[in-house]
Length: 132
Length: 93
Image (cartoon, rainbow over all chains, first blue to last red; front, side, top):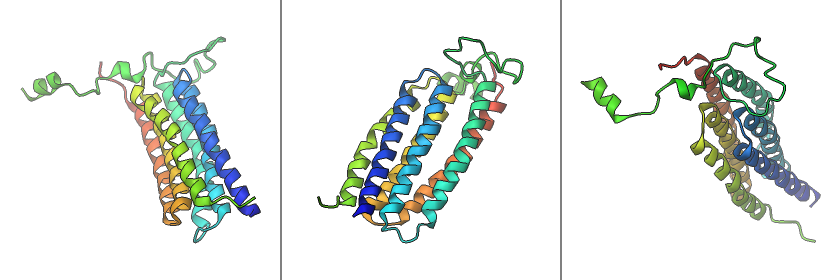
């Protein structure tokens, strides 16, 4: 009884955190602020959901769930740090820096974001030109 | 007060998770940059792990928890690969 209620509370809190993270991803103005929403709120939300499933019982062995939680807590921060560093170096636009860019001169940064430097989109003209 | 039925609660929460799925999908389609799409992919996999965990409760099959672990493993590798892509791609214009 008490265990079921604890599980429901954990699951509901986790889903609420995931919803907040997704609203942040959809509404915040640049890639770095979106990453801030998705990594922290999303990570804690998913951790709470998996924890809730473990608390609810009914799982053959809890090892997989515990491994999932540990792995996510260890790797989410590392992965988001790598992605943020690469996004900064590739010149992703930033919004709302009212005191300048504190990383200027620390990391090298491309002048324009990647999508303005490449033509990765498939165009038929290009294909015919390449084949001709 | 009766104890809530966990399978029903899990089914309702799966329906609620359609909202974050739609919002992350909107960001994935809308862009505007590559970095935004990679962040949206991160969010989509997080929602997928939560969905897999909730499906464990809704159906009573613990194999879905293993799927969640698999998605978490793939997510880390793919994020690292996309970070390397962003870092090394110089551009051809």
